Each structure stands twice: as structure tokens, then as C-alpha cells.
Length: 476
Ligand code: NAD
Ligand code: UGA
Image 1 (cartoon, rainbow, N blue to C red):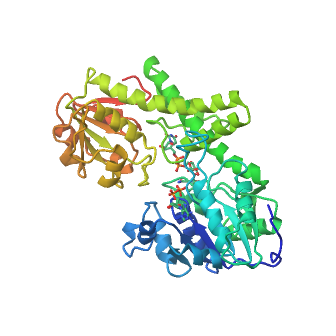
Image 2: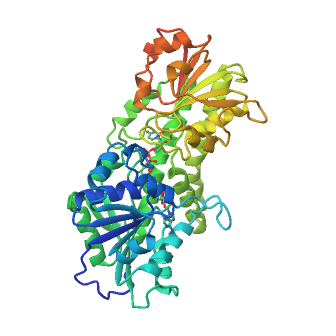
Image 3: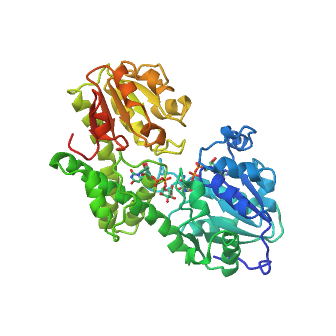
């Protein structure tokens, strides 16, 4: 979408800016700066504490944990990679601006509970309209509902509140991000594809030139704007659908004597199905799958495609059911009550290799157990006490008003396994695969249980010790 072509011919990109220094903006810009030493890359955010953390001298204090991220930051920060709260300056000097802000589900107003809240996209566009100078290419990096580029264009075109009265021009293109947390650097270094959508060929070529520094041309897919925006939502919907599909089958395996591992192997060996995204789990978490499917459901309903909306909504229904099913299974194994039971939770992040807890299945399952009066001891190698307090809406050591359940941060698994009645594995951290179960079993109060919702512990190994073992998707 080209608003006006003035000044674009022969435009060279020297300075880029990214609005939003979060899980996407941070790693993406770090990798771009690594491959493009000729570019000055500035990440800006309205959250000063986040920018301070990105600038922290001790790299263990970066705001997000991603394998390999520290090294990339160390190589480039202060050279051609900068983190700043001076949004005005970064926008003023940028030739290309990436919008990488959050697009969560709306909580109020029209479409609440389904539609994406675009207020941060809007405020970013207004900042660009106000401070940009000359010609600016605006790249939508956030995941957005189809036709959001139109909204951005309208704001850019109609801004009366410009700091500079000189004529300014814009091109809006879309380039959604497909990285997954925990493998962000690997995904950015070697993506399956880079998608660029738009009509302004010069703007597209300039963005493509950046990616061509390390990605081969055949992986760069060019589409129209709306296909690019929609493909991002659909990619997430398809991935989430696979997880819900296999989780629904895990329940069927548990009651029929089939084994989910064997079923996964049998179906995953069919090249048409493939083996990825078929691991049974306590349900998918993360900031995007749920909100992107809700948004897809909203879009379908908006266009009167009720059947399509209902189809995709089931993916979310199964995901909630899986989490509830696991909580119920644990309570059933204790003959209907976990009141005053000591339960060690292994893993609070929504998947391994990240410190992100957004929509983590551990939140709902922990809350269910707390409501049933359990005493929880929670461990995660990368999630701290404050984050858990925020997610559970309950301070460590405080008592849940209704049930008298409470929780304690368990930094040492062996120490906190003393007198524990059950251990629930909720995140598949490698560290948990190497635990000394013999030592743990001696500490636990009998009869003791391990509930393995990620299937990372060998049933055969555990059977050597005096512990009951339940895993998702097998008859227990
Ligand atoms: P995030 O919450 O980690 O980061 C967004 C940042 O934007 C926040 O730090 C916020 O303070 C900042 N921000 C919001 N409005 C601003 C403004 N007007 N000016 C300056 N800063 C502003 O979010 P995220 O996880 O990085 O996701 C960003 C987008 O990318 C979302 O649309 C998401 O759907 C999409 N996405 C996320 C992932 C992922 O793995 N997290 C992967 C692919 C795509
Ligand atoms: C997902 C997509 O994989 C990315 O391509 C996309 O860019 C991103 O969403 C986004 O738009 O935010 P992410 O949520 O970071 O990435 O992580 P995934 O690896 O996709 O895992 C999502 C959830 O599904 C996790 O809770 C994970 O444990 C669960 N999962 C995944 C399973 O339960 N089983 C599987 O087989 C795979």
C-alpha cells in the first residue's frame, strides 16, 4: 500500500526503528543488527523498565530469556543495536519502522473476548504520523486481523497532529513474524519462510534486501497485503489445531488401552501428516494461539461464516477441556480431595526454554488445585516468584480465602520433595528429564504420585521406585 511515492526512488535504508521491544521485537531486531552491520537498529518501548533491562550490563537481566539471545545482544548492543525510550528521536531518523507491539484480545467494547485490541497498533501509527520525516516504510510485524494495514494507512494519511509541517509520505507493508519462543534465535536465523505482503514493490524490495543478507531468496514469499496478514493467523490456527487434535486423542488412549506415543509414531510417519506438533500436553499456552484463534473466530462471524467460526472455536474448547481434565484426573487419584496435600509443580513457563508464562497451562491447573485446598510448591528454572504471584493472583505464603490452599516457591527440587504427596510435570524443561528419581522417591510421603503431562519421564525407570505414575495418553 503506497500512500505517496515522493522521495522513494533510490531510497536507501540506513536506520530502522522497531516500536515494541518485547518477545518479537527484541530478538528480531537483534538478529537483523547482527546480519546488517551497515544499519543502525533502534528498539523503542514505552515501558522504561523493559528498556533498562535490555540495556543492563549484566546480560542475565535481559527482559526475556531465549537461548542464544545474550550472545547476539553482546555482539551488537552499543554498536549498531540500541534500546531507547526516546520514541520521537528513533522515529524521526528512521527510514523503515517495524511495528511489533502487543495485540491481545479485547476485554471491553465491541468484540470483547474475541477481537484483537488494536489500540497499541493505533498509538504506534499515531507516533509514526507525528514524528516521521520524509518517506517512511512502515512494516506490520505484529499479528493483526486481516485489513489492519488499512487502519494504519488511514491514521498516517489523516494525521493532523504532525510535529513537522513538511510533506511526508509512507508505504505500509506486512511481514508477520513466525518465530516460536524458546527457539526464537534459531527460527530467525533459519526461518522456513519470510512473508512480505504489499503492493509497493520498492518498499518490498528494500525489506527483502535486509532479509537477503542471510536468507535465501526462495524462502522469501511475496503476497498481497491481506494474504500476508491472514496467513499469520491461519498458521497459528493450524498449529494449535494439531495440538488440540492430539490432546483429544490422548483422552481416548487413556480409556481404550491404546498408547499415545505409538499412535503419534504411526500417524506421524505418514509424510502427509508429519511428526511435528503432535506431542500431547496439558494444553497449549503462550500469548498467541488462543488470541489468534479468537480473532479468527471473530473475523469469521464478522463475515457471517458461522460454521467456520464454530469449527475453529472447538480448538479452544478442547484446549480448555484438556487442562480441566488433567486437574480432575489428579484430584480423582487422591479419592476426590487434594485438601492439605503437598504437591510439587515442575514448570510454570508455557513451554521450555522461555520465561514467558502468558496463558501457561500451569496457571489454570495450579489455580484448580489451590481452590481444592492443596499446598503447592512451584519450581521453574526461569520463572521467578513475583511472576508466579502475579499469575496466580496470590502472594507466596498467603492462604487462598475459600479453600486454605497456598503456595511456596521451590528453588531446590530435592529439598522441596520432602514429604511431598505428588509431583506434577507441566513444562518439558530438559533439566526435569535428568532428575534423580530414586533420591526424590525416598523423600516423598507414601503413597506418592507423579503426574507427567509432558511424557518426559520413562515409565520403566519410575517403576523401579515406590511411586505411582500417571502420564497423559496412556492407560494408567
Ligand atoms: P510483548 O508484549 O512482549 O511486547 C510488546 C511491547 O510493545 C511491550 O513491551 C509494550 O510496552 C510495547 N508497546 C506497546 N505499544 C507501544 C507504543 N505505542 N510505543 C512503544 N511501545 C509500545 O509482545 P510480543 O510477544 O513481542 O508480541 C508482539 C506482537 O507479535 C503480537 O502481535 C504477537 O501476536 C506477535 N507475535 C508474537 C510472537 C511471540 O512468540 N511472542 C511470535 C510471533 C508474533
Ligand atoms: C507459536 C508458533 O509456533 C510460532 O510459529 C508463532 O510465531 C508464535 O506462536 C506466535 O505467533 O506467537 P509459541 O507459542 O512461541 O509459537 O510456541 P510453540 O512451540 O508453538 O508452542 C505453543 C504451545 O503449544 C506451547 O504451550 C507448547 O507446549 C504447546 N505444544 C506445542 C504442545 O502442546 N504440543 C506440541 O506438539 C507442540
